[in-house]
Image 1 (cartoon, rainbow, N blue to C red):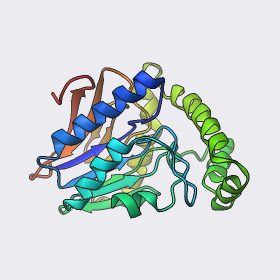
Image 2: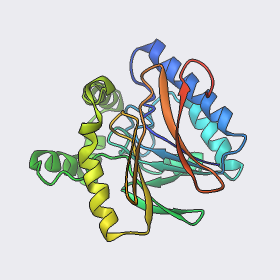
Image 3: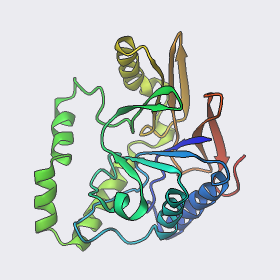
Length: 252
């Protein structure tokens, strides 16, 4: 079974919320470990991740341990960076055995072409300020300068503050299916030139939804801040399903 999940935002909220989220994600990983062959983490798994050459953020050891264990067992664990966890070097690859992907990509999985992405920094041609900000955040030169000048304690404190503001702007209560239109438009344009792509899978918007029209299939996953969250599976027949589970219980 192939699984897709996004927007866990580990480390977000107060101490109780952080523990609740990590424990829930660990239970989910334990549950899928029985049949998972591929696991695609589509961005914002961490609420903030800034990796120095020899320093990584504290915490998340239970999650990282489980992901490393899955990788050791031969499960392909693929980590797509999101706008909250794009600043990684090689720690996740070296220590956890993940394959890190830093841009949208068409993956050929069991003979099926799927376009996978977190969903940020896409189809923003009409927003020049946002384009400039995204280029700055993704600049390797600025990232290196930041890591040389700013002490890790200050960097992480600032990063968590900034991540909190950014996350609140994607509160699912403020989002409707209409707000997903720019990513549906992106998928529609991409599919017109790449007809072999069977489906498009995104996170980022914190709103679970499936949009279909003719041969176009676009799926969105929720975040983990509420009582229920979503994930996607693809079975042996290559059928994609958007599924839900209870954060405080087990998979439903």
